[in-house]
Length: 170
Image (tube, rainbow, N blue to C red; front, side, top):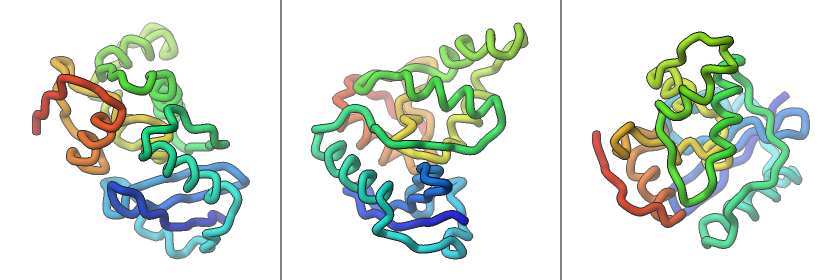
């Protein structure tokens, strides 16, 4: 059974989920694709992973942590898992595009073309926000085209990471 807790961050309340001693979810309350049935899970705010997560999120929002070090186990399709693995390679303070990720994923799909739109779908369904940094993906022209947690949060996260020249496109 999944365990959960809520965590207050400077960008709002988040729901965290653990299953089999791995972080499997971190969503802003009300964000697109966040689970609505999490209250059916076992509340366990003192779980050691949640304690570590709170400490690392505090350090991240204080500008003192650039990479998270937590056991994670997101669940998704093989394509989503490959996309989420690529997200974890984007250095803090930098961004990449959906198209660039699509080109990187093409070899894993045995020569089949991967569209930026397909990558966008996988990125948008990232179940572990911030820790898997989907906020570091932008449109082809550098525009901020969306974020399941809200565009205002994406801007705040990129600003926190000192990403310059943000172009907001709704």
